[in-house]
Length: 485
Image (cartoon, one colour):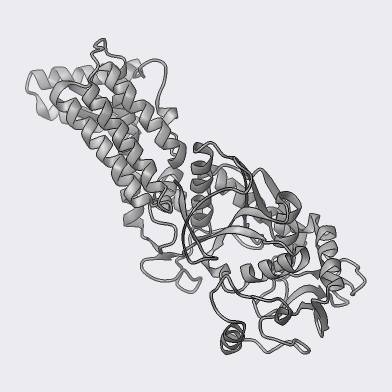
């Protein structure tokens, strides 16, 4: 049974959907004002693994993800300007152009990392009407009041505000006051109160709307409530986000959603931890913020980055180093090589079945999925995968893996890759791969040189194959094997 750590209850719980086999899942998406970096992408990769797990279990998942293209303020204290507005001024482009540029960059990165696209991508600017309808409900119930710069939600009127954090209303207000770095908003009643509608200034012409409260734009927290409930209903199964949303953004979502509907908002809240770089925080001043494209330009594959990112447990911090990424690159290549060697055995004539080995494969595959059922314990799940590989390699070296056994392992690897998303199926073809004639001539010449003990020539050819044709040779008891990079 799948157990997930629920931030709302602060413990692992057996996951049970609201509607039998149908699951509603909402992901806090990007604020489209900057280049998404690898720290952002860790969270979306972990959501991808979760969704793949649910689909593998036979659930039908409706996955909704927002794009914040208006309303995200410069601080959680509801002061400063819209982050997108600031970016547009800096880049001398319209807010719409800036948002479109960075949104495309984000989804291009997702595609390179083999992240399954959400079923519904909803932009804040296209759902302002839904947000205004939600505000009208909240206002009619007495939750809103007017401050100097906008309309605010009175958190003191919502019983249980901040229940996601486990802290009292009094404690939350005290901590926000202590941590505030920008002056308070005139007319704001409590530190935890948040803007649901910000009034625009006369010079703000783009992305502003007229309402009965005044001309302006929606607060950041409002959009997630309005759009998630529009597509998933007032009460749905899973809401994911970064751990940085645990203290303010998600408590605000709960407050305004449940205040409006009188129903429980979300059953399971899952929060991904931070990605550090070289043991420290990512920051522009340190020069250690990397985009997916920058990592690829350094010679690493997207699948190596994916493998590294999903290899940790999502609730633990993960430390990024290029040494660790190099190890992941090497690991992915070994996995691909393993699959390709299995295919060679799959096409051999022997077809003697060994029940003991097949049983061991099934046990290790089941162990992989069993570890994932324990709050997505990927490190332990990968340990079962590597045990399966070692068991297969040992079998291959001792008795020559036969066709039936190889097919059993291939089937297990493909099922495991439904979660990992590394593209194992692309390494399996109907027929064994062949080398180009020109390369095959060199391989044969090297074998002849080795037979004549002309090892200098053999080494020369081997180096040439790797440098010129990206073909790596491996000498085994069964003969020479090759792998094309």
